[in-house]
Length: 220
Image (cartoon, rainbow, N blue to C red; front, side, top):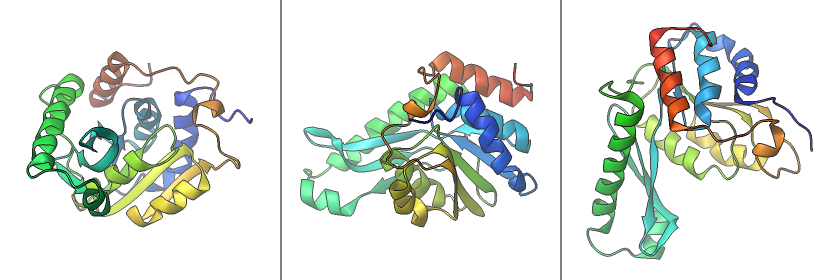
């Protein structure tokens, strides 16, 4: 199993080099918390771009929370993305999706306050939006995130990750304008095996990184 990155900061610096060409396109960098935030921070620094978190919450089926009926995606205008096929199969009772959507929006608001305080989410309309995670396995959360962001009408939508399986990238290709992925190992086992340090990113780290980015500070 080939080790590709020392840690998320190293992955972010390598990814930033592959994204330098977007520096003059008025980019906005959006990180999937929590692990995507240290990666995205390095990209945002290199591109001199604002950094924000992209909060996504799954709408689980009744009694099967892991089965996603859809997802709620945060943003200047929060979007609900529904998987109609799964809804037909799961047949949730009337009002269930609306109630679950509100519950997940409340959780997004809680996390938004934790990570941003009173700072509003960045508006991606008319910008190059670069969505970043520390790696992708199945791509379900990323798919919802891209669908939600696309409805906010960025000028150009990029998915950028250090590592992901090629079959997942193929599935995601129709959800954005471009995918930048540094490595697609075959066979693919897990994101974490390609990092020396893949320890969990804490809420405190996320808050610190976002504050540092807003202040325009260096890497620290």
